[in-house]
Image (cartoon, rainbow over all chains, first blue to last red; front, side):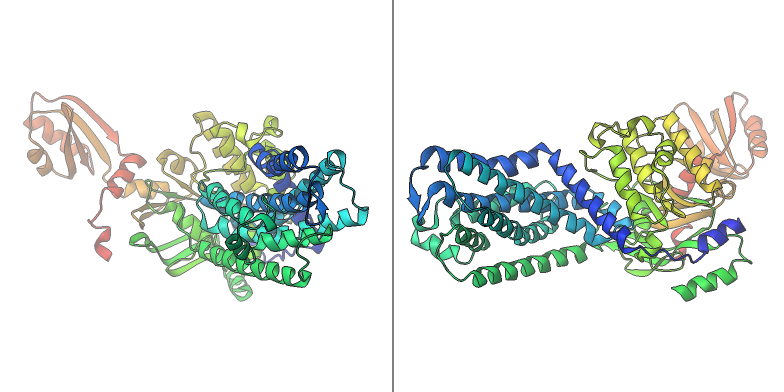
Length: 272
Length: 317
């Protein structure tokens, strides 16, 4: 017994090396990705919906038309790209978090020495990877079937912009994940995601929206991201990019603040 | 925290096993519900301590406080002399909790790989799989596992970091007899290697089989604490069962009888000693039949203790 006591109270320092911490972040992200990749509900809804809309409205119906000084197939890559990024990010962070929280799994992880931020970082990285996949697939479709011609640098910038733009929606997803129940989270997301997409001009191009909706759009984060994406491909309303980024940044900070309240509230949570 | 540890290290020569986890005067409320009331409780190094109680007694709450998953309304939860939320302490702690849903699309081996990565000195994965009896299930997705296999995977996650202190919340729920005994063996092996274990259970047999000490908890209060033998000794010692024409009121008058109740056609009498009661019974009722005498096991002790609400237990309030 005394040897056990000696062993158990030996004040051995257990500091993690930076490379060990990096390994944890990598593994957390890797398994978060694998987990969702194998989750058909996630991949199907997040990847195939934007692609289906794009094929229908961008390639089948209006391929020969032009809007905002661009061919429809090119214009819609920017808007459905924004739509796809939103979906990947909201579903990627909110529904997983809500389920993990509500059904006890997050407690198991919190009881372990996992660095808490690794969990959130994994969800953000997952959202970015799936965002990149959606946008890349849209480009492949547009180039192959819609006659989209963009210089490589512009395509890279488009993907980069949209992937960076997944952050505000990951943050929003975390905020939703902290305040929605495990089963109601997907419905809550759709309730926000679909109207937000419509009002921001992601389905019906901005200029065809009713006047009132156009005014509402100016206050919505997806509008600002889509305008940034359109700016990259040479369309949109040519407002200041800095303003769009500022709105998105402010929105991100607000959502992270809300998520933080949820995070702290959870410390005294009564589940179980 | 370091000062506290040093204090404990200097003191450990006198104490056989230093306190590695404790609740000190802890109260925890969920709204109007008082989940824990003034709970004092300690786990010593190298011991297996069982928190034994019915569902809703506060066992899980106690474990969650010790894991730093929530904070007490008053009092203190300590692990290794410090704050349970301290990452250094979490590194030396493993936990098996009751979980509603675990990510189902990850494989057993992947779950273990991820959790092992959190720790500085994890066990080799092969060893973890063997300890939890999961060798053949490494590539199976969690969603495809049976209830017992899921429990064993959660156990594997609790031990994979090679922790000094292990919290097992109802570890054998949903296991069949064989798997339960296998897990008991594994817990014993962990203790042999110097680990300390706090387990909660409502299986009396489990507490009796594994624990060095048992704390019986009911309605948020620790109502008895001691070795399994001491717990058993706290209640009336014998149970006498017979078919008799004597009334319950008469039976309760007999020497040393603490309880008598009708059980179908027979009566069941609890008494400190059997002989004086039996002598009196036979003298008064010549037609008495079906006499059985058994020792009150842990089960009787447990029932007696937990049914004792409002009696001597709560009197200290």
